[in-house]
Length: 149
Image 1 (cartoon, rainbow, N blue to C red):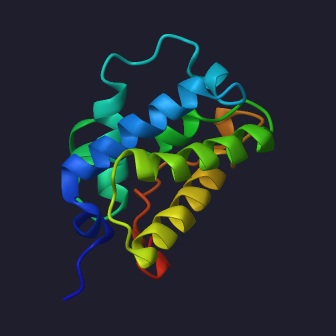
Image 2: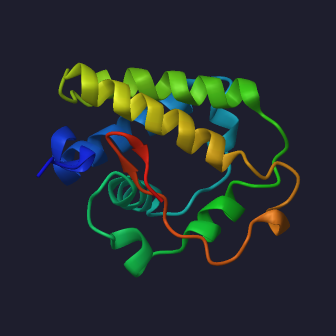
């Protein structure tokens, strides 16, 4: 049986390190930092870690105890088109993989990059209003071959 991306990257500690590194990079980036300028949830990094972990094959802590996929999409919707910010967020992610000392495995890094590009596009899918996000969305899962749900 093939390991999940979550396992290959180092499990919960690695996902947490990546979430922290990405968040710091975003705060330092002029094109992305304004998205984090409002007071966020006091457990933002815990929630981000749980979401990323579940999406990448880890435990279902996000959907079991925190929120649903439509909640996440609605939270990120209604902010207009922001392609430059999305590209900068992706750039921050690429740098964060090094900051978090993720394994240098080329397949893992390529898969994480593809996943994050896809996830960023998903979060930007409803630029006009959160009202367009449908109910009952399943948590998206990502495998070595791409999205599986």
